[in-house]
Image (cartoon, rainbow, N blue to C red; front, side, top):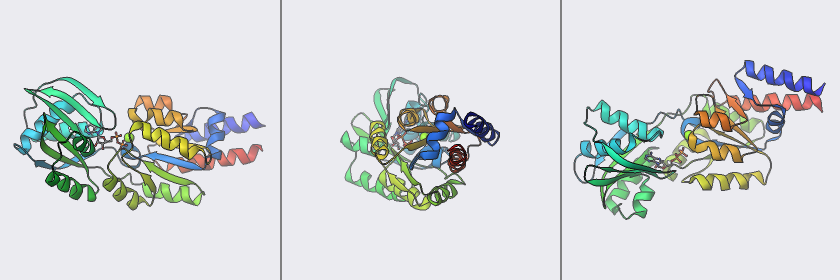
Length: 289
Ligand code: ADP
Ligand code: MG
């Protein structure tokens, strides 16, 4: 019977690390036409490392230490990587006060005598901090697939920090399997257009870049006009997108907020598990109809 088929599919999935919170979510997964992915922590491992520090005004160490001071209050993967690098270099990290985060943009705090901002080059450009020469260095680093954050102090740009993340080993396989299942896959990211294009190109997936949190919601609403959409994400900042999709899927190693918001989770932390979820749901649907 129908409830028994669903119960057995849910239990079978759970044994394979494919957690679905109920029959309704399972049914939706069997009908989705598009799967949207967050980039950082979902298609990549979410452990970016600092690979370059460029001093613009002052020394490399000063820019990195001040950036780390601001990021010490941040849980963002880019922030954690900056603090780790400053610590690895044995730099003294000054205290920061009154820190504030602008989701999808960056963080600001008072450090020593000035206000330090660490965030996207786009935000630095909007604030008039990015000189033409600095913008050129940013573009060169981003073309290599790196994420660059600008470090500003007051009205000066003091440095650039370039970070690089690693693709999940099964991310390409996941995209190929979804395509074979007849699904549209798309990466939605707040990261810069050049780095996003490099990563999406390596995976062979459609993408949209430089999206603020509200832009990701608008993108999901637009995709939903063509059919049910699953959103796969891991971070605190992904929770609104997970909630606005037809069905949210959290990475098992993701944040508690993502796991609580989503209706399904990939406990193995293999992103290709989303193709397994679709297959399981489709098999269950065809058994009960
Ligand atoms: P993603 O979609 O890849 O998860 P986010 O929306 O979290 O990216 O962030 C988008 C961009 O905003 C980052 O690439 C970075 O430029 C900037 N940003 C956000 N938070 C921070 C932070 N704590 N420190 C520095 N830059 C940040
Ligand atoms: Mg993420």
